[in-house]
Image (cartoon, rainbow, N blue to C red; front, side):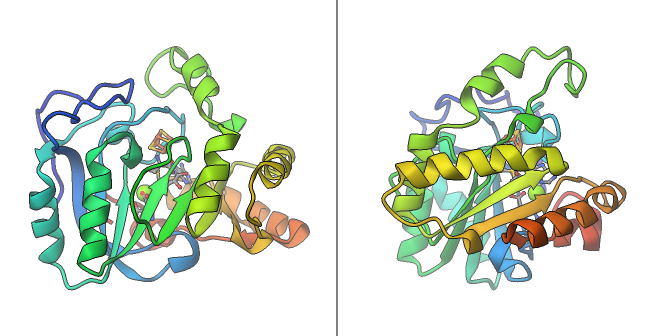
Length: 260
Ligand SMILES: C[S@@+](CC[C@H](N)C(=O)[O-])C[C@H]1O[C@@H](n2cnc3c(N)ncnc32)[C@H](O)[C@@H]1O
Ligand SMILES: Nc1nc2[nH]cc(C(=O)O)c2c(=O)[nH]1
Ligand code: SF4
Ligand SMILES: [Mg+2]
């Protein structure tokens, strides 16, 4: 169910525009195969909220970040739409789903109903909610929308993005609280030094172990052609560094069309 719309945009700063109503801004809700990470290939219902506190230049969900569109759903409406599908796995994504307080309510009610939940998050917010798999994708310097890479202007989001994109204490709390995979979008070999530095800081800060097996490198690319240009390099880096590779199955299969 793609949701197009003319509703007003969520607060682009990512504050809780929905806090009072308890509603969630939903960009799309659909069934597909989980395309990324350790559950790749598992049939799942995707709930995509709108609005993000970051602005990656490469964001493959432009209509939840740079130009957010959505309809407002109550949590009951979201649950009813999920229950239309025959699936045990639900993926809550965005945008940044954890900037919305009502995501906590949705996650608690999904857990009560016995669903396995994955949350796709940029790792800047710790929720108070049950999550089976925290799929955390910390954003590297190569994601920053500098003027030459801004898809929507002249780099006006670069400073805010840069200030917010990495928060080691928040990442440490996430890995301590949840079963977590760390999924880095890799644009090239240049990203590896920052990944290594960040992992060192995170391992120093967190009281639980961060295993190399839970570190996934994902090639950057919104289309088959773009992925073709990055995936072999990323596979080589995985072999060299001893992490894991994650494909982007939905790009291979459907070229990341809406609703896939
Ligand atoms: C659209 S984001 C939504 C969740 C959250 N805001 C985040 O970034 O993790 C979903 C996933 O897609 C990844 N992603 C976004 N654009 C991408 C691109 N061009 N190539 C590869 N992965 C991308 C993100 O890193 C994240 O793992
Ligand atoms: N099939 C499919 N798998 C995905 N895994 C994470 C996604 C996301 O956008 O968060 C995603 C997505 O958009 N589609
Ligand atoms: S954090 Fe996620 S949703 Fe936000 S701009 Fe980056 S990739 Fe897109
Ligand atoms: Mg996606």
